[in-house]
Length: 112
Length: 113
Image (cartoon, rainbow over all chains, first blue to last red):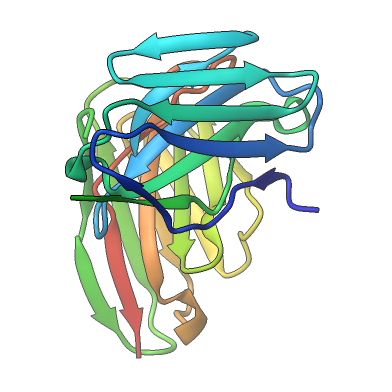
């Protein structure tokens, strides 16, 4: 079992729709959770951080964390073509403090 | 890129030659990390540093060494480059281990022929 799992996609959504990206993790003691956006040929860019159960909203982005079920998700409202990228989930696991474990990413395509 | 630069940005080298990649930060962050990114594998940690002269191995450290003599610089050395080390290398920095928000440099694309 991978420590951080994401569906590789591509996830295709029409412009204006809600994109839902999911991530599960194996270490129940994990404390910090992050979403990075990576455009092709570029470096990962941190877009959301979440540390406690529930929802955290920032503009069109909402991160959701459920520690009991060991999943974290990212919702993108009013998806735009510029949101087309690979989204990486990263987890700061209790067992590997000060290091992040990354999923392999979900490729999102927003179609016109 | 949060005050992080990497050099060189592109490099082509031959098998068996030593290669050093440099990461430089202006944020005075304590933690620095080296990752490689390959298709199908995602980002994998090579080495990281939690202070000047304090370093530790990541999950794919074989064939790599690091040094950190100043807060702002973190060097990654491939002792004798192999074709399997062809990859994109990213440096990242973080201020606090507890929350560990990491910010990435622009990357170095390394090709070993």
